[in-house]
Each structure stands twice: as structure tokens, then as C-alpha cells.
Image 1 (cartoon, each protein chain N blue to C red):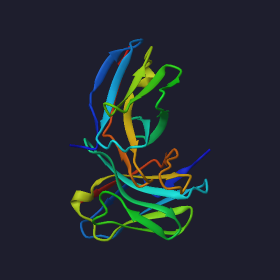
Image 2 (cartoon, rainbow over the protein chains, first blue to last red):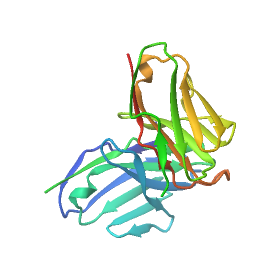
Image 3 (cartoon, one colour):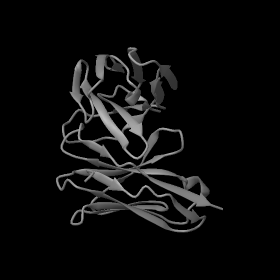
Length: 110
Length: 116
């Protein structure tokens, strides 16, 4: 089993829709969690951190469920510019224990 | 604005050649990382450095070595390139050397290496 797993997608949704995807992790001792966004042929960039109490930033909401060991990302009122690959990142006990998921591809259609 | 630069965007080398990939960051970050990114496998950590001349192996260090002689520069070396090292190589840097803490990683634009 991979340490961090994501549905690769692609998720193909119409503009304005709400879309959500999850990321599961296997190490219950994982300490911090993040979502990165990677545009086609570009480098990953931090989208948002995921806190135990949840985190909202405009149209984006991230949640952590420690009991079931997954994090989620919800995008409301999706825009064409949201089309990208979303990478889940899980951090363990040290900076060298940062695990990236393989990403979920999202495509927003007009 | 943090900037991480990599020496080449595209590189083509032959099997057996020695390959140097260089990464420079301008934000005085302590941590620097080298990843490779392959379809379906995501980013995998090759090596990590938390200070000058310090390095730690990541998940897939075999066939690679690194050098960090200056804080701003982290080099990845393929001693004898092989076709299975064809990949996208991404360098990243972050602030903080505290074990267990994590700060935002800033990535360079990547080097697409093809080994023939």
C-alpha cells in the first residue's frame, strides 16, 4: 500500500460546479498535511495547509480526518483556472519524511 | 519573492555519462531537496540537505549523489546515467532546520532529463 494515495482522476466538471477529492495516508503518526497545486509543465506550488480544525480560503476548503486517515479538498464555484493537478502532501517526523501523493487531475470545462 | 532556479530546463545525455544538475535559491533557506517526478508515481525524494555539507538520503538515493558546498546551491549528480533515470527532476527549498517542522517548499521549474 502506498503511504499517500490519491485518485488520479481526471475529474472533469463544468464551470461553477463543486468538486471534492480525498487523499488517504497510512502513517497514523503523520503530523502535518498540505495541498499543492501543479499546473501542466510547471512546478508545484503550495495551495493551502490542512489543520485539524479545517481550513478555508475563499472557494477552497481543506479538512483532516485523523480517525479515518484522510484529508480532503473541496472547491466551490469552480473556475476554468482551477484546472490543474492537486497534490496531497503528508509530513512525518522530520523534514525528510515528506511524502507527496501522485496527484489528482482536475479539468474544468466551460 | 522566493526564487529557485535550476541550471537547465531540458537535458539529453547518453548512458554512462556523468550528469550535474544544479539548483540555486536566493532566500537563505536551510533546507534543500531533490525530487524526481514520474507519471503515476508522484514526487519521490532523492536527497535532502538541511545545512551546508549536510545531506540525508531520501527514498530513492541509489544512482545519485549530492553536493552542498554553499548554502544557496544544491547539486545533484548522476555518476553514470542510465535510461531509467530519464525523468523530471525538481529542486525545492524551505526555511527551518527544526526536526519535525515543515515549512512551505518552493520549487524550481524542473529539469527534464532524457538519457539515451
